[in-house]
Amino acid sequence: MYKVRPASKDELLFLREIANYQFRSHIGPSIFPEGVLLKISRNTGKIREVLAPDGTSIATVRASTYTFSLRLGTASKILKLLPPPKLRAVVADEVSRDLLENRSTVFSRHILRLDEDLRAGDEVIITDEEDNLLCVGRLLLSPFEVIHFIRGGAIKVKECVENGGG
Image (cartoon, rainbow, N blue to C red):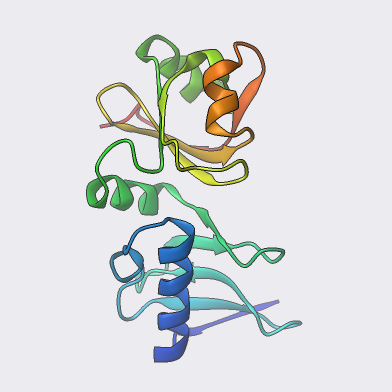
């Protein structure tokens, strides 16, 4: 169903530029180093996943938008590269444990701070108050709505760390 092969120079440049655009920072070369592998769909010939040289997943490519769906390892790298609040949603420490156990949705009332440059549908890194990685997810509302709504889901959680952060 998929074939795995090394990325060409042009593909690597393409992936890095998508990351730079999507994450609004020049972090593409740090996220996608030389030697990354690509998981290619045999049916369409399009990139579906980017793998580190050791075979671990860096990011999944969404077929509909050709943007990246973050993984925990990539989110951890982004946290080191970009200062807060970039690409982050900070949740209250008292709900962080519950979030790690349930792994479903972060509600607006639990978000203390949020990168105001994000848009609904963007990938977001969920951290605790000390900037420790908790989860990655997809923003359901705009930052304005998150700040002003006291009810309802704000982030759909996709993947969480196992041990509760750093």
